[in-house]
Structure formats: C-alpha cells, structure tokens
Length: 379
Image (cartoon, rainbow, N blue to C red; front, side, top):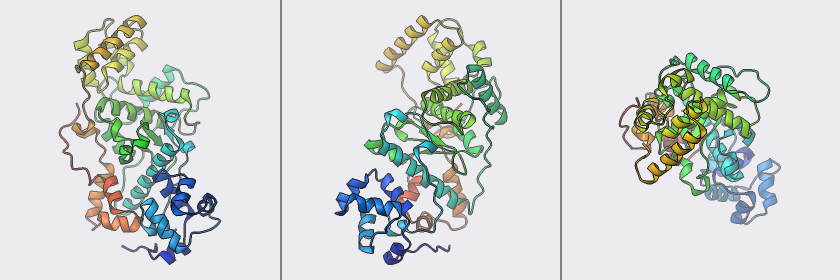
C-alpha cells in the first residue's frame, strides 16, 4: 500500500500540518499553556504552531510527539482530515461538560471519520438512509415529533405497532456509524453522555462505555441522537429545547403512541410494566413517563411510581443489563469493515502506518482490542 506521508522528522517539519497539532492536543486534553510548560516554550509559540504562522523545529517536533503520544509522522500534511468544532455536534450533556472534554470528544470523532475514510478504499459502507428534516421554524409539538418518528420507522421498515428491535444494528444498516468511545475511561470525560454529528460525509453517533452499562439507556441515547438527525441537522446545537425535542422523538420512536394506547393501562401494575420494559427495550421509568405523557396516568400516580422505582433500584430489585450482552445493540460496522479489508491484506499495522497513528489506536477503534463475548440478541 503506497503512502506518501513522510516519517523522517526533518521531512515532517518541512510539511508540518498545524491542524494535526490541534487534533493531537485536543485528544490529549491539554491546553496550549500546559503543553508549552511541558515543552519549555512559550504559550505564544504553541499558538503560532497551531495557527500555522510558524512550524516547530525537528528537535521540538520529536518532543511534541512524545508529549502528545503520537508518532512523529502524525504531524505531516498529506492525509484527509475532518475538522469538527462544538457547533458541529449535538452534545446531550453540553452544559455538564468542560471545553476540554468536548474538544477531546470531537477530536476522537475526527479520527473515527479518518479510519472510516481509509477503510472505504476496500469496503463499500451502507448508503445513508435518513429522512429529510421537516422545514419548521420554532419549537415542535408532540404531533410533529410523532410524525417524524413514524416516518423514520416506515423508512427503515419497522412497523408502527411493534417494538423496535436491534436499534444499533438497524442504524448501522442504514449508514450511520455508531461507536463506543474508548476515551470515556479517562476521568476527565466521564460526564459526556452521548453526542452525534451530521456535518461529515456520514452521520456518526458516539456513546462512551461508562454510559452503556444499561442497554435500555444506550437504546434511548441512540434514539435521542437519531432524533437530531431526523429533526435538527441544520439547527443550533446545545439548545435546551432542541435536546427536549430529541428526547421526545426518542420516546415516540421506541414507544409509539398507537401501540402504547392499547398496551398501557390507567393503573401502575409493576409486573406489566416490567414485561413492557423488556419487550419494548426501554427502562420502566420510561414506561411510566410515557403513560403520564399520554394522559393515562395522573401526575400524582406517576410521582408515586417514580418513588417506588427509586426504592426498588436502591434495594437492588432493578438492575441494569449491560449492552455487551445484546448482540444487536453492539456496534459492528467498523469492525466488519476492517474484517472485509483484511481480505485485501489490510492489518492494524498497515492502517496505523497509513494514518500515522499508534497501532493501539487503530485496534481500539476497529474493536480488535475488545475480547468480550457477544452473548445473545435483543428481543
């Protein structure tokens, strides 16, 4: 496989790409000031390197590579690069995250795109199959959210009165890249719940592993991000009303009104709620919320039900089911693409050389570093 990106430090210095420094610094969650102190230079010097005004000398470039834990060749131009800013992504927990946390998440997503772009040389990914967001100005009422959710179900061949099986696998089949972000093990990004972007050549949804210990929560988070794709592709990111609409869309998608009005009663019956939770792939709390939303439970009854659920959870009677146990909810698109590419003698080492990454980074993103068994399918 040919690769014109240089690896000699002198050549890399001559072809220094300032955008790569910014990406590596964001991945390392380091400010310009912190990086400057580590290198023994001024913050202004780092700023000039990152803005493209100056380039670091070869000796400094080697120090940069060590400090940011990337190969020297990472800083050379000549490779496709996707640039994302906060305005390009929907963060479900925007106000609970710091600037550094969001920037690391965005840099990680840039790398997901780069890997996908590299694999597309050998593998044809599924075409993106999403409805065009309706042209609406201002907040969307529940009728609009219901129509949008029903439209997505119909477009993806899911009946309106049946549970939505294998939400992750269905999204991937329709061209959406879903990844579990390995960076979530870093204590600095624990508060990131889920986020997505439709600003690249393919929609990407990222869910950190510490938030997918519960398959029902993972499904709701993914449905929430699908709501952004179906409703908000060109709207302001991070607005509270937009996040509420995405939550409403998720409820309509996973618990469609047509079915719920038939299945939900006007009393809280815990055996029935537990059964509906398992069948429809949502938390029991979501069942209670939906019943209240549809006017089938009073506010007072819903409050008592929430209190009972909290007591049940504290007593260990309600336990989450890890997503890893449900094959249909584990992302496989990038891993499968890599497996097909292996037929063309592509390896993690060859991809790492092409992308100028550490091989461990490639292995983590394609999932070859995850040896957990996939146990069974959902529903």
